[in-house]
Length: 597
Image (cartoon, rainbow, N blue to C red; front, side, top):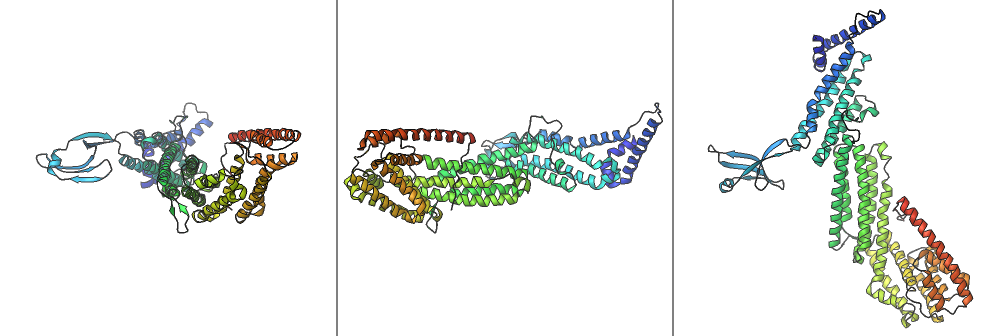
């Protein structure tokens, strides 16, 4: 019995008087050899005492006893642990003083806004009434819980340094005790994790920091990496996630909700004020910079607990989803808010170029912060390219706004049918208006995108000219065909400075396709021109082509052949579009392969 008591004190003995513990272990070893001898000599009357098994059972019981209070505390996570006084306004009374007649002479209170204030006014003090309320004091709770958990971590270090040498190597005593402690620590974290919602973000981070430090200690003690991660607790429901995962999930969900709410507010505020010009004249709003400041702060929070593994990995994945959400929010604004003006759209374009640059910096930073096994699982660059997709949409909307300008719209209505257009004045005025807008674009928009804006205006100009055939077809005359040819030359001459000759030729050819559909007498030429147009402008339907053919002086046989061939082209095009849309929906991919040059 005395030897058993010594074993129960193994932790203290190993540090204060290890010789006693060694003697106890020697007794166990001696009895083990006697048990073996009795078995060999078949002395059935002498039952084996199995001291070694009993030793391990007593060690298990001792370790479990160390965690009883910890487990009880974990079960109480979120439960009221403090009785406080509250006044009628809900302010907490932190301190009060009374005179010998029990009258209040002083109080210190904490307001609902978190501000501490003192009250000394006698009249106000006389009017105060208090109620007692129970609350969960997280700081006090976690201070005690973490103090005990770090104490268990210290136990393992002392066992490695002192207890291990008191046992024969064949006992693997440190590994056995480590597993006993490890399962109990995991059980505590699982229990707290199941109640993660009752903890603040700060509280969750403190617990995650403990787990990281605890795992690092285990690595320092030589524990194999596959054993370092917390196992499921013995009493944990198999359907529940591990406690650490639940703490991380709760933290990430709050991060997602908070940052999403912030960036929605930021974008709304951006639209309430005029964009501001940078020193180089580029227009911007503050939202883009603020968004990445928020993301950087979230990463810095995890850096503060020195985590480069699972917690940082989950934070980076959340940041990537937030970037996608930020992009989607901007797309919705740019696409759906038709009242956005020219300057605001220029700012939106620039914002996303800034976001692209910041996102690349963010990607580089997190790759350096993450442990290699996690860094290999992160592809931030794909998300980064999404900002260029938003910039592309802004570019398209800038072109639309330019052509929706009242003056521009008036000139566009004159195309094809008025004397001003036939004389060349209409197209010349349109080109001059484009020049005015592009002069502003050169100042307002990042230099890497000015040519893209110019290209978008050319695309929009051609689209508008094609769409104008939908309501009706003007009378086709030689003067009209001549004017179309001159317009092609004028447009080609203006856009020479914005794109390479090969690319410009494709756009000018599209203008030539309009002319060929209106004037060519060759069936093959008309069919090819229509095929080229419908590939780029699906809105140029067969009905529009039919009206053009009907308005022309084309022989019935050729007209019938044109429509027959074009009808097949339309069917093939429609089938291809339907197949592409089905594949896109299946793959659920929203990124364009479109970047900066």
